[in-house]
Image (tube, rainbow, N blue to C red; front, side):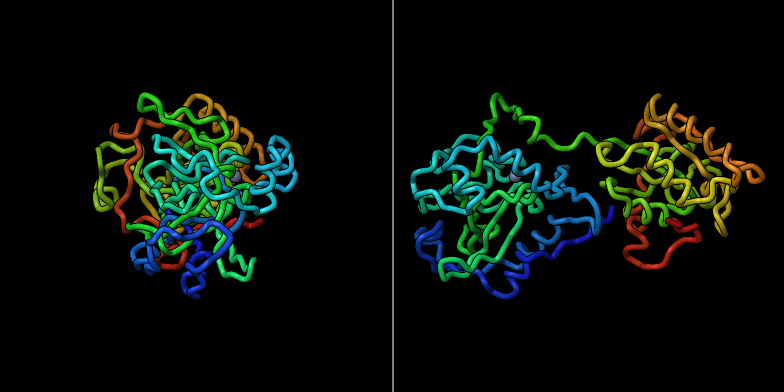
Length: 378
Ligand SMILES: [Zn+2]
């Protein structure tokens, strides 16, 4: 479940104390909030909310792909902008105070990026700052906003941009209300408001979270398989657990010392637009030895068996075809593949996936080391 914490410029900015509340000419105070320091817990909250993969795509906790779009894609999106929107979004301009259409908007809903559609702020994070620009004390997800030091106009400010398309939004100041103490001062033209109607939020396609898929693989000690899959681009989340056994909610001790028939299994949530199920199967075969029966290296027992639990008929067919294809390879002629493949039981059912105890999650990330698994050789 590991997520690499990104301590970005924003936090560096806090540490360096570069936030200034004195300003002139751009969005800023005048609201009488004073110069309240950011509470420690807000800084911690920011850290825990912001996640990033080391390489490859970047996903937010709320389920969006926030990898920066290519310049080409941004240029394409920018064609739809009106001149006054271009001035702010692309040229980092500032709309005049009290002129934006969202300053006094008190309706319930979500504010998405005008350029790419990424949800940025919500009505429950908005407040009346009196500055003349829409003001928020928190974004919907800290990974959806990028922060940059801005020294223009002889001031030290922190500019805020959409993390996905770099659209200029405005600036963030340290004089906001509780609980964050922050004031995200945003231009109305950088945002588009999607109103919640009859309790329902009907987001346009570009503003919806990813349609993710799930895969389950058992390949020996789950500490190792979890660690390796966490590093695969396109993989959003990996959790260690037990699957294919005879009892509900088993403990590690039961799985180890009694005949529960569970296999140490990882649940992988992935982005099918970035990595296919077949590619994941390929990784699975690199991350463990599919020819060892009821063991992986020094770990022996049924819980260390090699197994694929398919979530639907399509995955089942793909997995069976993959095994057939692999078994034709010279390396598996003398050492036969023993990996089993079956349809997964639903979560909550006896044979379904049960999350392992917390101390097993992110084990290698927390404790270092690795299991006796073959590492990927490419
Ligand atoms: Zn955007």
